[in-house]
Length: 226
Image 1: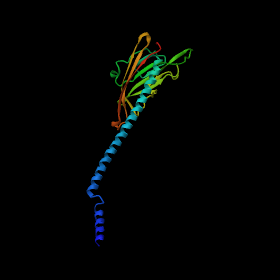
Image 2: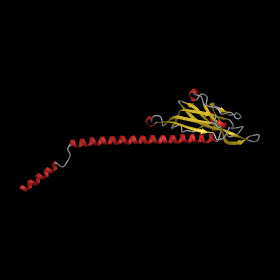
Image 3: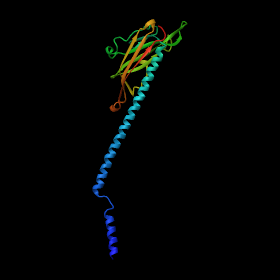
Image 4: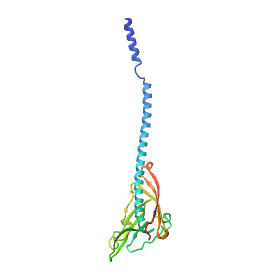
């Protein structure tokens, strides 16, 4: 009988010390909740930073591609012209001109950066002409649209180029151009030099934490004499 009582006593003690108290479970759940909140917050932050980096990378790729395209065309072009304009009429003469007063004094006017490209076309009466390319900076509700248009023929239909018929060269859903500056300087031996500065931000409205600002400048040296 004594042996049975001892066994019963041992089993009872084992049952009394084998589980968790309510206080221990509450503390454990509290610690688990704190860790979960920290982990979720870190995950959300990492996701936001990754999306921000991807947005910036996409914007930089687009801007760099655009500036490289402009630079490549202008290097083998002639007669750099920068001024307030909404169209270029076939037969007009382009001369190297710096932007009038810079973008700060132009205000809400459309500015054109034009030049004669290396592309040629046949004239109606014989001979050839260099087609004109134009990049337009058009103000639009607090930012500028960067558009491009070009001549398709020397004279006749399609010879005139206008800002209203140009197409955008930047992804305006992801990139907003808030400022720019164009400088055209007449170099020695009729080889001009131009600098283009673009300022703005990438990102979409409503996601202010994911907005990235940029300030990019490039220089272009004319290879062919005017």
